[in-house]
Image (cartoon, rainbow, N blue to C red):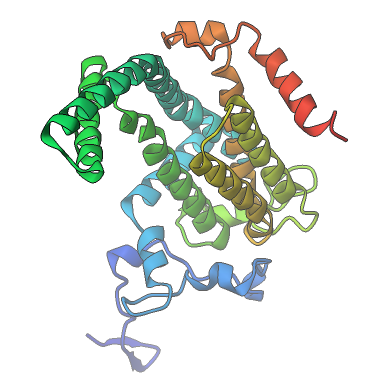
Length: 337
């Protein structure tokens, strides 16, 4: 439909689709809005629309319902508390980690403790089963391969029955990963949407503009990179501490566990340059999340807290866990030098 304006017939602009109502373009230097200090790749996916575009997979994630819900949670906390965004990010992280991941981490330790307490019974069953299979193999003249397969098949069945009996299948201990990792992704993407202007406005001001002035200390602009690298390096150090605490808890790790430990160490180090290329708001969230992870790891070593969570006692438990941890840390990293 045409409309008449100032003696000329004009065609009205097309109506925006529902999904694009709150997706403003990346800021430029015109119009008084500060140009984004992020790398080109960091804001490229904001305008990557279309199923065949190179950023279409990320666009689908950035506009997904879980990310939108995370944005609403952050905006709700910011509106309800009136705190600056740096404090809002920290408060939301502490609340989510305390309300979601801490109970799941306690449940993980509960399952692992029950599995550990089953090990003597499993070893006893393995010894008796090995003797029975050996006798049966001699009677029926089984080959070594048949005897081995028979042993493994029956051993898996018996161990599975023990897990069902005590309701402690090791797979249940992985529930923390299946919840924590997606939550980490959704929070990171939501903060990236805020920092690049790819989300709606709040109280007449875009969230990006608020983040640009709601930082603290050496990172007053949460939409910019941390040029000092203090935040990225801190994230890497905290993650390495978490890995080392886990490694010091394990005595006589298997080859697979050793490989996993080295892999996680490498990922922790690689997180430093990655964190140096994303907005400070995201790195601040990563740092707060890592600090909460370290705190939860130390808290779950406390005998009183484990007793409060009804985590069964095991032979590897210690009455002085923090003293033992410090002694192990000193012996591994200090006394050798």
